[in-house]
Amino acid sequence: KSNLKFSIFNQSYTAYLNGTKIAKISDYKAADVAAESSTVMSLLVKFNPQEIFRTAWTQILGNMGNAKIRLKGSITVRSLAILIARIPIDETFTIEKFKLI
Image (tube, rainbow, N blue to C red; front, side):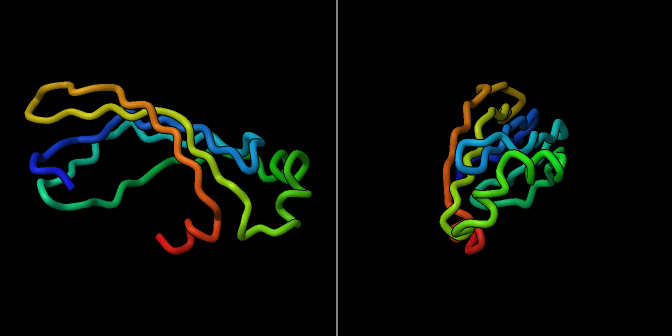
């Protein structure tokens, strides 16, 4: 949580399943986050289910709970009309952990 109100925009990520690229995720609209709070943001996910099945089917059929999801990309943050930064994002988590969020 932040002491300042800020906006997140220009979100752009690539999603990987156990190292295999599976989707592009983006949202270019601003999402405002009030001070000392959190917010829900929408994201556009572009993927081809046939491509995922063709390239990652063995990973999907295996132990899915321990499959690793990686989101790599960037976001832009602005606070008080000041562009703070284009922040790189590189997060990895298991599907089991993601279900708990």
